[in-house]
Amino acid sequence: MRYDAQPFEILENTRIADGIFDMRVKNDVIAPLAVCGQFAHVYVPSKTLRRPISICDKQDGVLRLVYQVKGEGTRLMSQMKKGDSVDILAPLGNGFKIEQGKRYCFIGGGIGVPPMLYAAKQTENPLVITGFRTSSLIILQDDFKNIGAELVLTTDDGSAGRHGFVTDVLKEKLGEFDEVCACGPTPMLKAVAALCAENNKPCQVSLEERMACGIGACLVCAVKIKRDGRELTLHVCKDGPVFNAEEVVF
Image (cartoon, rainbow, N blue to C red; front, side):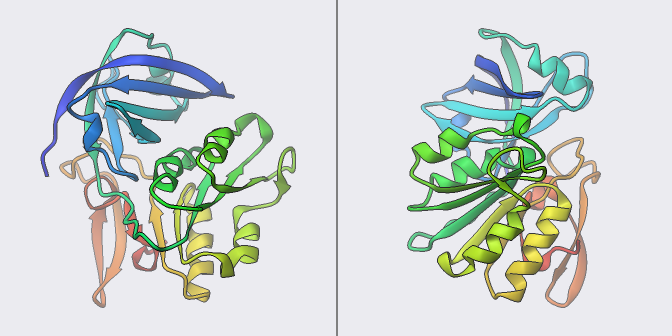
């Protein structure tokens, strides 16, 4: 795989929820190469390691990166301004495999919601289930509605949408789709994968792990996978982030 870091022009970097920002960056060479489920590795000045951000969408040479401020690096990202140049290594990883003719259920939890938007845009009549801890963290609902998705919102505390978890909705909708694609916290992915396995529904999961290099050299983002009767150690950045759920050792 070829890895290419290039400057991107920041077109927008806007706060859209509590601690969550929507950054649009333009590069006519790199942006068109991205596929759904891949990520970008963003260089933040003064920081040694890049920040991995899932690709929320792409259009006309622009990548959309929706991220949450969790530490000093993403705090500095949130202060970047329109017109600034940012060095980005992209697109990285292996994305979702979407087959035409299937109806997909896309499930996102928290900051795992953004990559579901670009994935859902690849299909017709997608079912999208989004889950957030509370109403102040809700993002991208209008974006999903604008692409014609059947959208169900849940919150852990009941402050918006349905009170409960994404798996509560998934159980009710099992007969309405052919395959699941999910991204979010590991406990959520584990529960989604188990429910799909019990009901013979194919499921792809995008894993979230800490990473440093983003290209499989540093071996930080190791994950255990069962394949061909063997347990293997693969890496989220290079071999994923998307895996078949039945292969993941949660």
